[in-house]
Amino acid sequence: MVSLSRRQVLIGGTLGLVAPALTFASKSAEKLVLSGRITGRAGKPLAGARFAIGADQITTDADGRFVVVTDTGACPAPGASRDHEGTWRATIGIAL
Image 1 (cartoon, rainbow, N blue to C red):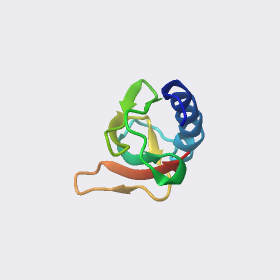
Image 2: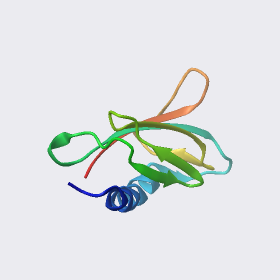
Image 3: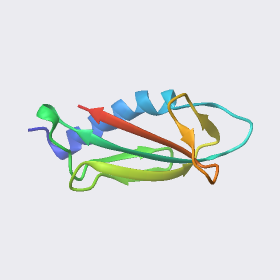
Image 4: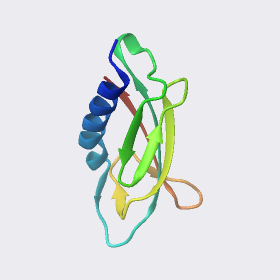
């Protein structure tokens, strides 16, 4: 089993690689709703995992899921879509 502090380092490092891939430079800030699930070995959810995206601190729920609403100043990359209100939405899955 991986300790909680080690999970934070692993998740932070993984999201540091994933989050930039979700965005590219834009002229103005746009709202982005990012949701997903973090799983560990054998696909088991990582409950209580903590990580940051920009200034936002996120903690996963009991099922390893999270949702963050952020103002990124960037537009989502392919795979993200706008909802009927014009908000960008993206879903990611991270397996450690």
